Length: 170
Image (cartoon, rainbow, N blue to C red; front, side):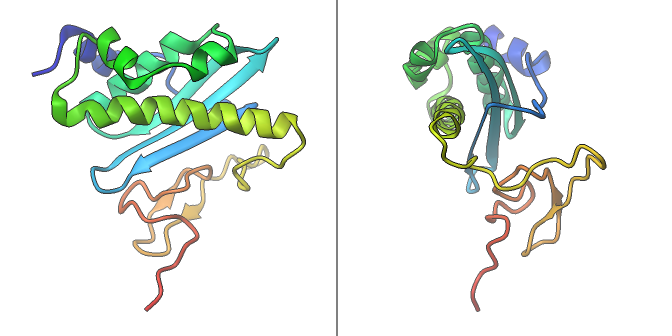
């Protein structure tokens, strides 16, 4: 079902983690299927000097995140923004049809991180209002619906997929 490339990136994912002082952070998620991706980038001389990610999801989602991080590290922002879901899927020797949305999520998360960086650079506030406390490293973004603790930078609950800080009416 999955190619050797997909299984390699799933079993040995590259560039996993966070960048505490990231220049840009992008998060996307599909609560229906459960895939959630957060990308962190450091930019130097208009190139992606470092990229890390945290992904909660299936085999394809993890492999896509790993591959996107490899494909964009060291690339110019323009080159990184041009990354397509087809290019990601092809570099993994294909994905099953029902998993192609994962390749799109990887490119979207990266693009959101670049947009966040560009916004910060132009003087707009960071896209995420929550940051990790350097003193405590506390992770305390609690979901209003299921009360699961989530990474503080998460916008969606990793358990139920609800938007964090957004209590449902009724």
